[in-house]
Image (tube, rainbow, N blue to C red; front, side):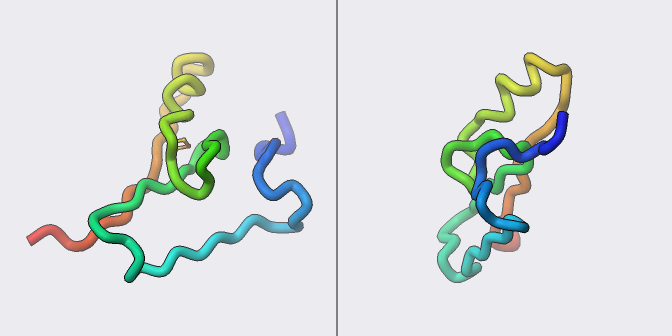
Length: 67
Ligand code: FES
């Protein structure tokens, strides 16, 4: 099972990503399953993972406050 992260920045001791909030136009979906090919953004890869494992992973969505 470990390492959980099998492909993203494997040469780094710790994966840390920064996204400037000003660069988010409407919303940004950020991956929490470590399976995305568009890391750190969600590309829907959590769907097949969830179907295969019975897990319930999904992204964190960052958006501007809804008015
Ligand atoms: Fe990882 Fe969607 S691809 S949460």
